[in-house]
Image (tube, rainbow, N blue to C red; front, side, top):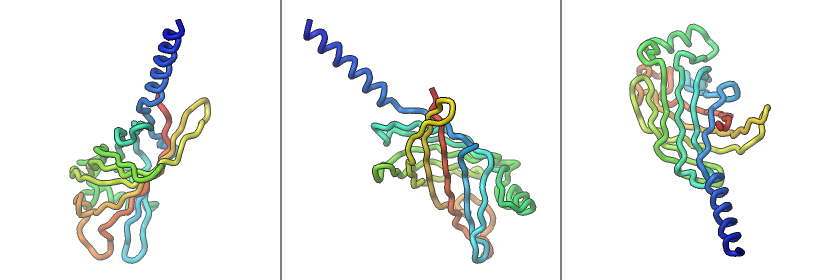
Length: 190
């Protein structure tokens, strides 16, 4: 009887460990997240952001290298706080949102670089061109949200080249490098 009791406890503990070790699905909350960028105009960086985006993070706490992320950005939601410039960015001169309304990112590899930092490499498709990019990601932790929600926070940065995606022409007034910063709050899906 004692052996049976020990076996039952071991099986229960094993089931609990498997349940807590399962990858978790987190839905990005666009109302509490931001996708921003900066690009040089002559000497000073000009900031902007995309107001509409969505995504899912599937994070495995015990095996981060098995994690995944997918995101979609509504490129027409670009905003640089200057309406004429924003309209020009939507034209074929830059993003060509009529032909390429969205950008997507799908991760291919997660590499842990510190206790809460990662290099997340994946395919970014923008303006019909797909390139491999690496995001430098920091996990900000977990929190209990309103109405019983479970939340996680993330920050990611990368630098893209406009020329790699055919965005605009080479010109001295606009820098080729675009600094991208992503601040994300995500909600655990049940």
